[in-house]
Image 1 (cartoon, rainbow, N blue to C red):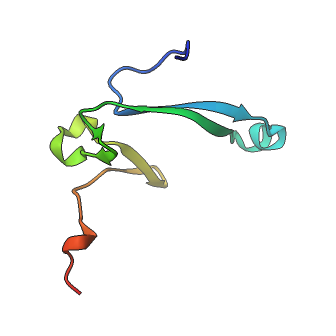
Image 2: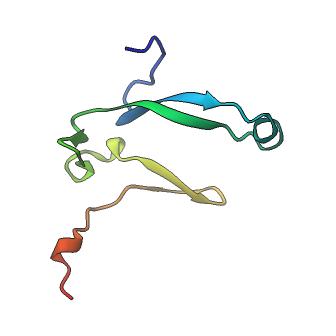
Image 3: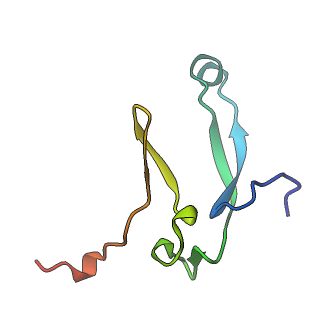
Length: 84
C-alpha cells in the first residue's frame, strides 16, 4: 500500500515516518523514525515467529556490534528447554 522502493532479497522491511529532529540529524547523522508498517518474507517469518534456523545463511540478518564488527543471527535457543 506504499509507493516506495524496496530492496529485493531482504528478510523484512520497515516503512518509517521521519520524526524531524534537526540537531540530531545535522550533528550526528541520526534519524529517528516511527514505524508505520512492517513486512517480512514468509520463508523467514510466519505465524508470528522467526524461522532463521530453517533458511540458508543469506537470509540471516546482519547486526552491527561495535568497531566495525558484525554478527549474523545465530542458532535458536529455547528458554523453555533449559533445566533449572
